[in-house]
Image 1 (tube, rainbow, N blue to C red):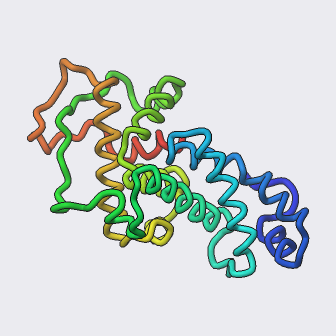
Image 2 (image 1 turned 180 degrees about the vertical axis):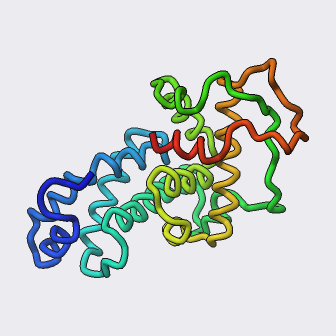
Length: 223
């Protein structure tokens, strides 16, 4: 849905020319989304407020350097994600700048296979319409490790491309793909333990059966 009034690009260019009201309009337009992302990344209302404030302060300080190759919303999302991850690093007492080192290494690169595999009692489309499903998904996302949570939120919720997600988080595109797959698998298993039919459970080594495709989970995340 297109915003009512001037486009982001028009507001950005006006703000670059010193129109503070234009920047205030950008803040009003994107503040809620930035706060929501920060809240899901940090798990704290107070930290989310700080991240939101820092995101827009950083945006106005660096607006002249924004080259408009990407959408303003994408640029802003990257700033917010970095600000939120800095909060997580400080919370853990970490000072290194590498996201790979600070949060979680890739290890041997193996993709774990889910332990709980079962057909769902209802179709994902029906489940996606329930408020409890969205609440459960929010809880499941919060249980992911910080880097898996960040990759999932930026790629599947904020709809950044693999390249944009990698650039925002300072990791390789290959790492984005691996960690996104891990996040999707963890979320799918978490939901399957609730919505799966125990009488139609499959053994973990039954790779031929895939009851809940990743595309279904991705659509639920957008809902």
